[in-house]
Amino acid sequence: MFDLDRFIEDCRAAIGADPTHKAVREVVARAVSDPAAVLAGLGEPNRAEVETLYHAPELTILNVVWAPRMTIMPHNHLIWAVIGVYTGREDNIFWRRVPGAEGGRIEAAGAKSLGERDAEPLGRDIIHSVTNPVSRLTGAIHVYGGDFFAVSRSEWDPETLHEGRYDLEKNMRAFEEANASFLRA
Ligand SMILES: [Fe+2]
Image 1 (cartoon, rainbow, N blue to C red):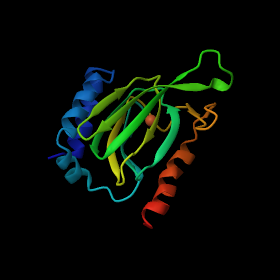
Image 2: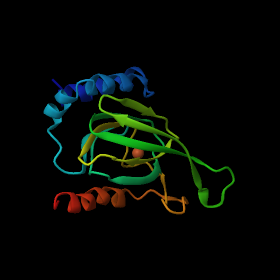
Image 3: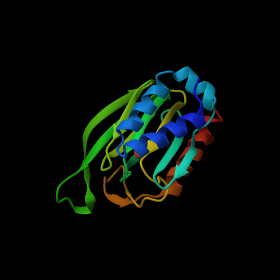
Image 4: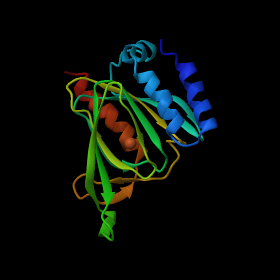
């Protein structure tokens, strides 16, 4: 059984023992190794949303539910993250800055497709965009080694690939806008 309070305590203890992502990755990997238990513990996803499960200066835990085929533009976090998928799939494109490029332009550098039971660490300087490639909701636990909502960071225009200031409100709104068509269907 996945117990949320226990999971939060385990993550807190993990960063207490090791402030890098390594110990937390073990905690997340253990949780998503039993996707049915996570679904029972968090509830079956029924709409796209970013649900805050825990929020503190040194640790943020989110339940991120992606609408079918939803894509979020390239962005960085400037804190490490661990993503554990418990239902569906998250396709990540990883980007890198083009050295000396005007406008902070990025180029694609790699990709990783995460499915159920995958627990993937992202380094603090990672730039990624995320797509849910499947036709149903995807659910993942996202753990961040800091305050996800307070860090001033960047996003990149998906067409020009130029850097701008990350707009938290806009990104949260994207989940609601995705629901507008998803829930109507
Ligand atoms: Fe992200």
